[in-house]
Amino acid sequence: ITQYGMIEQIRASLMEFYKLTDGDNWGNNENWCSDNPVSDWYGVKTNIHGSVYFLRLDNNKLAGYLPDCLECLSNIPTLTGVNLSGNYLLGDIKDVFSKLGNMPKLQSIMLWGNYLTGSIPGSLLNFKDRTIDISYNLLSGTIASSVLESDLWIYTWEDYVKGNRFEDLDKLRWDAPK
Image 1 (cartoon, rainbow, N blue to C red):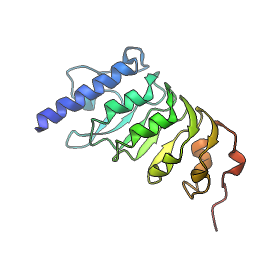
Image 2: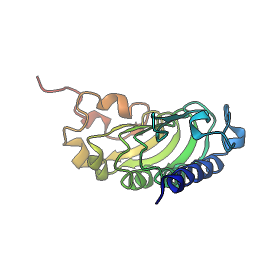
Image 3: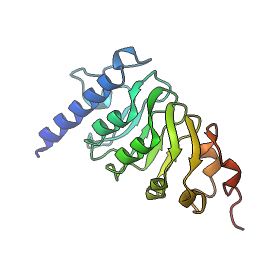
Image 4: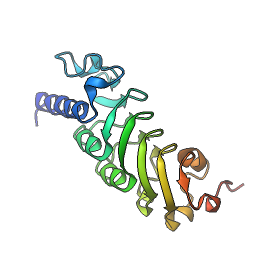
């Protein structure tokens, strides 16, 4: 694919993301879907080469089904971080992790304060080298025993799951080894 083709693919993916998250009703949608370079679109961060590497759209009234939104973003190969916190995004956390599995370069995923549901699957361990904040959602039920028994996020685990309704929070290992 040519560089022009890649730019058009990224623009199309961002425009689809905009539609899927009710972009016309965002708090700030300045320049989105315009002819301006995507670097001028609110919340889109690009490097010196014009490649999109981060989306910062927290607390911006995004609404939609998060797994579909992530599917769109998976077409942006240079994307390394998203902050979609404090919005109205829905979806089962297992579906979210499934989509994130197709996005290996995405290292920082901030999803706190949305409406994600479900229990924490063992597949969370596949993301141990990434920062994923899923606090203050509607997560409930149990946390997979493989996660509870791991050293995953041992220093910051509490921050990434607080504000949810898990049945087995008392089993989490809050203390880091000395």
